Image 1 (cartoon, rainbow, N blue to C red):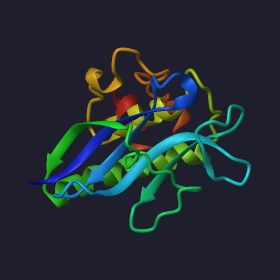
Image 2 (image 1 turned 30 degrees about the vertical axis):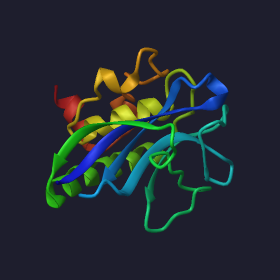
Image 3 (image 1 turned 120 degrees about the vertical axis):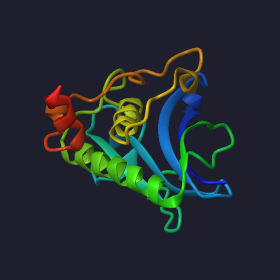
Image 4 (image 1 turned 135 degrees about the vertical axis):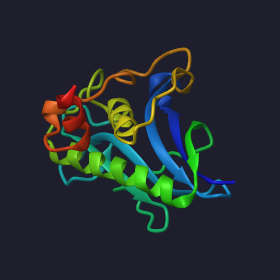
Length: 171
């Protein structure tokens, strides 16, 4: 078995358990999570908070070897999370795509965008990061009820200098 990049959805209880929080995770050959990328709002101290309504949009990578759930959340390990494989290959190929995703996550976090429940949120971050890895977000991953912002890509002009912005500007 190879390493995988998975697209995940976590049903937030306060939102009637609809899959409202999308994320990406890299698993090893045994299906154990190595890293996870999440987007959402940030607290004033810069820590992650997917429920803060009037804040900056952020994107963070969780390193499962160095857990700190307050700053870097873990959704893959929650029993109600669902995942769909996006990519499966050897370590090197997965690592290259993941690096592109981490670069995009860092650019999103540095862009100073405002968090918006309907448009610029965890779901638009997950979609934008997946596309920066040259992966497509599957419709099945979003379930019957689509999470707000799940099909939206963050505007390339808002994320200056990213590989994604360069490729969008070339089109």
